[in-house]
Image 1 (cartoon, rainbow, N blue to C red):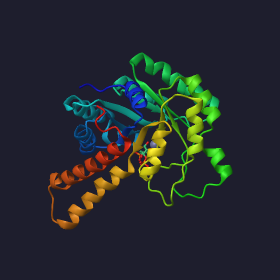
Image 2: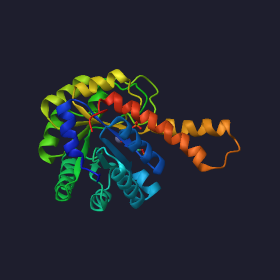
Image 3: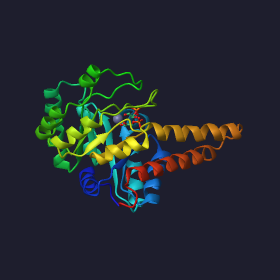
Image 4: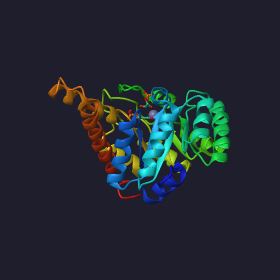
Length: 284
Ligand code: G3H
Ligand code: 13P
Ligand code: ZN
């Protein structure tokens, strides 16, 4: 089927109290592992590409890969821009066929973030494209954040209420103690803050930096309203880990298919586990 927007899938996830998996891609094999895993789990799925991913593969290649994978799939597939910080790039993705975009103005002062996000939402609506935006700053991966740092970095629930009301976004990315990449300590999430955000706005919440979060915390976050969960690092670990194993066992192998094939399978297996954890298995 054709690529679909994110907003409708988020509504269904909200009604069913589960979360959609959003998986980062950089190449054909990872796109295939994401959609293959979603098909195997009968799950709706989000393929996402960061600005770095787009730079590596090329915008038209990412779109063509995602479109083709979606065409061949019996499950709904979204193509989403991850962390778009340039207004021009966000607009280019909207015009070229992404069905969802993240505008990340989290480094801007609140009023400026609202103004820029609102501008993206107005343009995206014309194309039927969904918009995620971010409020609060994701931390580093070392867990020694003081209470005052937490208040400065994490999403303020009152600001979240104002941000959603004034921008009309489809999904809100928050900072409650997650970080991109591998965690060096035990991540302690601020669930009270997440609960308060959920009380102040009905906007579906997005959790970034979710690869190293323990399963119990993922379950609790979903109970408290998280509806989109971003995973990149776990895919990288599985993909490159399998590549290392293959090459260690077959140091003379030169056929890329024999090296990349097992990596594609390993990534798909990790993605299936995440889909089951997020509760979106069987929800296509
Ligand atoms: O948000 C972070 C994602 O893991 C994308 O990372 O910018 O290296 O593609 P990247
Ligand atoms: P991880 O790499 O920590 O899973 O984070 C992914 C992410 O948040 C992409 O936006
Ligand atoms: Zn992220």
